[in-house]
Image (cartoon, rainbow, N blue to C red; front, side, top):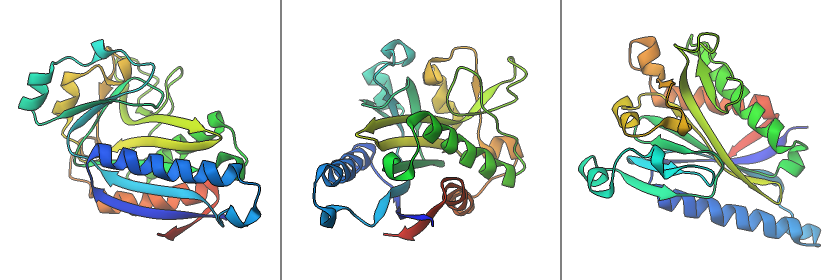
Length: 233
């Protein structure tokens, strides 16, 4: 029987506001997990959030600020903000036209470990891309979803993944470039790589790809890959 997970589309939302919301959901789930009372255990195994953000750069715990290739004044000129955050991974960019997903999942209830969890996220994204005739793949030694991984000089990232897990509850997630303005990636070494490119679904298809259409497909793929029943919050 599929586990129930709540689904919420926050639309375009400030990064810090979405981050705080994730933290609230994680704390609530962890608190319930630590409670001895079955009454406090929710019927759902988590929440899946979709959203977009205004231009922002974030860097994970293991990241190097040297991979941000501009100063605070230059950030203001391009209308972007910057946050050091508590996920894994290095630096990445979020902005309009990019579909960001934050799964706040109880991995214990899903009966999976962190490595398997990330692999399943990648699988859901790969299957979503296939529906739009884009062949995504995993790149050895790197998280996320990439294109043309067998040709190092042509390899390019289309989806970044960075997560945090506390008491086997996940937060943060992945960012799929749908209609992203790829110019914003010029100001960083994406995920710490200096020899890899970045792309989007629109660039690969040479025509606009609707983000609402991608949301519908991705929601279904996450549900299928994780064997979940998604219910609107």
